[in-house]
Length: 85
Image 1 (tube, helix red, strand yellow):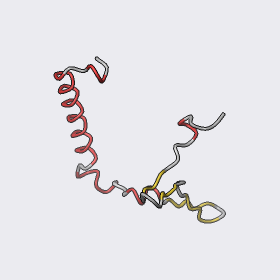
Image 2 (cartoon, helix red, strand yellow):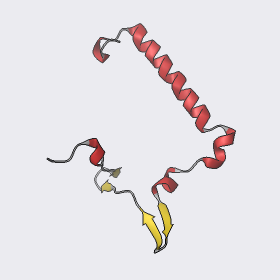
Image 3 (cartoon, one colour):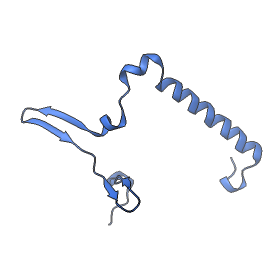
Image 4 (cartoon, helix red, strand yellow):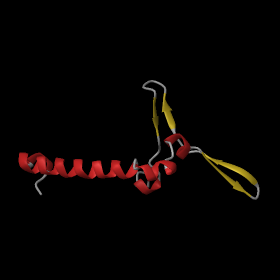
């Protein structure tokens, strides 16, 4: 396939249609009636508690908040390979 800057209109439209089809299929699978009981809101995914022999352990995702733009940022983690060497 051609690079992004040199993609022809027909290639772009074909790629767009393919993406839209995959997106629609994913949406239908995610919100299918049989999946409703298993859907978990993002707030519940972020706030997890585990019960251990020592008691309840609360897991929180590390995050930083920019007070100027009011956006929450999540660190990429070591798997992103952005740490200093």
